[in-house]
Image (tube, rainbow, N blue to C red; front, side):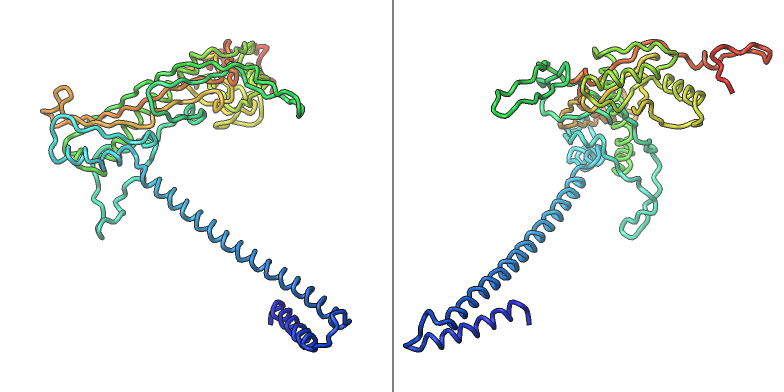
Length: 409
């Protein structure tokens, strides 16, 4: 028997005794037994009420846990459903009504298909000959081979904001807007950094690819082809535009006075930190990165390494950066890429003279614009560096005298 049942049984017994005493016409309310029993009943009622309240809270907690669990399961299902509803650019095109109509009656230019911008970066698992279709194996497909994913190191570091128009008013900050400490009851002070408002017009990036009419009827193969060819063209250009925007920006300059970029990078880290930001990345020319790796290898006992960091910042190669120059900073705070929220796809058989060759052309258009919104979060390292050829050159014969910079063994 539970504690609650025991308490109720004891209380009922005392109540019965009280009823018997009170049924006597000559009972005395101040009788000692009457007072003690009523006190016991009050105490038992309080204990019973406490247990009942606790059981009620437990039941409410179980209900809340059940609701939260059901909510998490529904949220997970919705997320899975959202991912399934967001196909790659190839899937979106081959599932569209425009593709089906153009495949059945190919002539002129297809209808326009609009899809989310994230379709450009969706990936699709490769089709294997071991994947069953209605109990059979997929036939081996002969066609374009899907290329590896496009590396976009700069885009991976910066923020991205989706907009609905081709031109937006964007706020940039010349310095980090810091708050102030103000005692309670005193007038609060405003930020001293005034933002600048710029009108930003998004660039239209187009990428097109050609394939045979027969291959265009093969939807699974066309999915892989469009994902690899068209998406790659868009992503390559977006990365190049981000690098060009970085190079063209007016930034704080740190002069490199040493033979390598190592000293300049360290001073640039301090410059960004003084501005109130946390530098995490350095963008530099690939050959300068190679020279830094060789310098570190020659000056330390670490041995050859791949993808190290310098002074705690991760290097990113960019061919658009001139040799002798590097950009250090908090790129997620410093730069943002504005992107239009949709991508458009067209297909035609009327491009140039490809109609008589049974060649189709599919065109993808996207609109983006990278912006340096917080220049103070970046620092540019300028100067000269020791080139690999100069570092590799040395005494031509064994009898030549060692130079003053030769590292001692």
